[in-house]
Image (cartoon, rainbow, N blue to C red; front, side, top):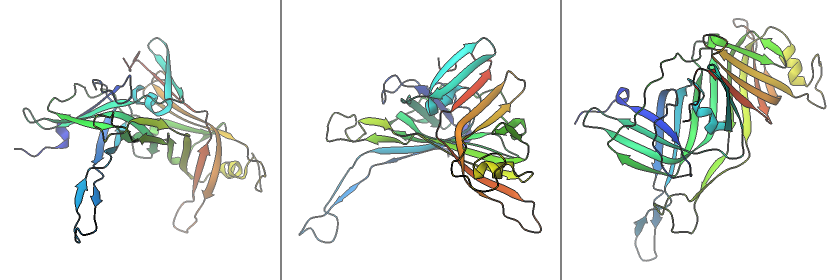
Length: 319
């Protein structure tokens, strides 16, 4: 049998109507760079008095599944499953407004690999995005890393039907960062994470299929955390860190600011905008050495309410 390689693989997703009820996975997340899911049997070692030094019995514990998917975003499809809700307006170009919701829809995710007549497919149901990290840095395409939880897995030999996107990824030189209304011209990297703090729950209940799989899922409080690195050009961001425009000392009350990151791929009708409201800087650092430029590193948090807006030519990518 031939060794399987990643270039033969396919990855697709589909929105579930009911959590854990598998659907056909035929939607592209973007340009997928890697996928890695780890199922775990959580074996319980049972010992007994009189049973000697070795384990007496080995029994299966709860079945758990977690994974990561990294991709270069291409459009509106995956963002709904990170924030929770979406509304589409207009007509070519269409505007997809992704906003926060208390309920996060779940996904069925399928991955396959192997050549003709030698396919191996794993289909994960009840996939919930526990967190998503959006990254942009000089020299790179914008990337997204999803940390996921899944209920169960089914194997097969039929690969998902999905095609690779035909558009370019969003590149670093197409971006613009705005902080507190001012364009930051010398940002070298920015990264922020949306944490849904999802959890899959097991109970004393034999109704699961399989019985060892989780029976419920829940998303708890939402968190936003981020970092950025700037080549020092002015004191503006240090003042924002201190708590107010033109501040020279730490303020007792910190002024919340807005952070916006926009990428314009080809024209003004082909964009993605990450809008983070109610942000505060947690810390800042500006190391100085004779042979280096001075870079300012800042971490920030946002209490929400945040959104992602995509403008493109796709009417309804969730259909």
